[in-house]
Image (cartoon, chains in turn green, brown, cyan, orange):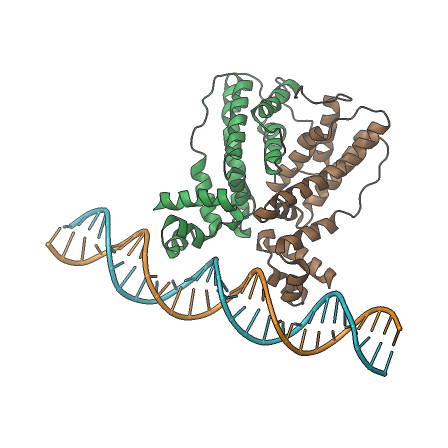
Length: 182
Length: 182
DNA sequence: TGGCTAAAGCAGCGATCTTTGCGTTAGTCA
DNA sequence: TGACTAACGCAAAGATCGCTGCTTTAGCCA
């Protein structure tokens, strides 16, 4: 039944958007009773967050040992994750939930994407290579990806994701990258 | 009465989030009848969009004729606009409205922020200076600003906005900036 | 001053969401 | 096998929202 509800959520998010996903609608689609969903998850935001959590543990690319290639893979992976049906909607759901869980949803969403990029960065650091700080990767790669996907900017494809990583690596091959900030 | 409704919208967006802004709630806060608001604006999305439109026509910084300084001013202005109460919430409202108006809201929001940066870019182009294309400014300045404000990343202040512009100008002082894409 | 039009208030309806109490089922362990 | 617990279905009640006729008010112009 949990799987039925989750699948219904994904389908509804894809079809009508995350803001239109309501618990009775999910229950109808899943063929279960709304009260069960209310008791188990409480609010639609919590349900969305739960589904978003389960979504990202799949198909993480393996590392090859080259920082730039690894970053490219994670970037392309993130872009594909955002681009697939309902991907951006889940991002929006994390970004704009109830005020109480707002901080939690935001931190969780940022932590999810940060964890992805931390893997190749830490690996490079252990190899002794100079790697840009995570903050810089967020600014130069993740932020443009999210921005362009949210606004449906055309030309936001794998090539573009790779270019972002390439430009980041070119700007400072092994530089710390912080621009003198405290 | 229009002003009362607008103020109520801003307050409610700040307090409970844009997704919780409903017409009866706005009407209660503004001290008017819900039916009046329904007739005038129709939906909550339209009301949000109207308020968002009125918001940005204020206090645009004047140009000094130096591209970097002008970009810095617009960047700081945009950051302050996002940071003030309800600023991000309005962005979210534009990003996630009804499916029908989704494209329209997205295009409007992107166009608003693009128009801000087009002013100093066009001015520099008319002076004969080489200016980066708007797309590049969006990637390197606007996207990080939005990303960090949405996720409440600490240290996102005027200094940071200026650093983004500085790094953009340093990377290619008068280069076209497109990385060989078609 | 007296009609005319646009806009706002009022009351109520229907639909949907949310919650809660209660009965039923399934799964577990002694 | 029989009790126990947790989860689910069912149904009813309360609340909110979106919307719509109808009335009332206010501004305007001859």
